[in-house]
Amino acid sequence: MSNICPCPTPPGGQATCSDNQLAICRVIDGEAHTECHDLTRYYRPRGFFISRDLYPVLNTVIGIVTGRTVRREGALPIEDLTMLRQGRYDLPGGGKVLFRLPRFLQYLFN
Image (tube, rainbow, N blue to C red; front, side, top):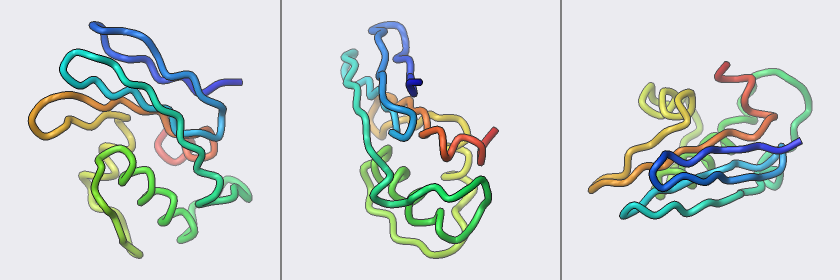
């Protein structure tokens, strides 16, 4: 199976990644840039449960999507949780980032 993130139209297109990858479509100046990020080096899925072990991988996702460095051990701010649930981040100065979490994280936000 694939993890697919559609890009907004215009310009259209999609990021097609493997199930365990973060799929991203960044639209900057009307141009789509797609990315796939393997997150298994940050977290090895061991089952469907929420644990403190997820903080590093969720912080990594937030960092990849937003471009900011995130180092937190505790609970995530509501703004970051909302972004993760919606799969969307508006870039400062314009542009959008749409993303789809890897399969092993999707259950957290459904």
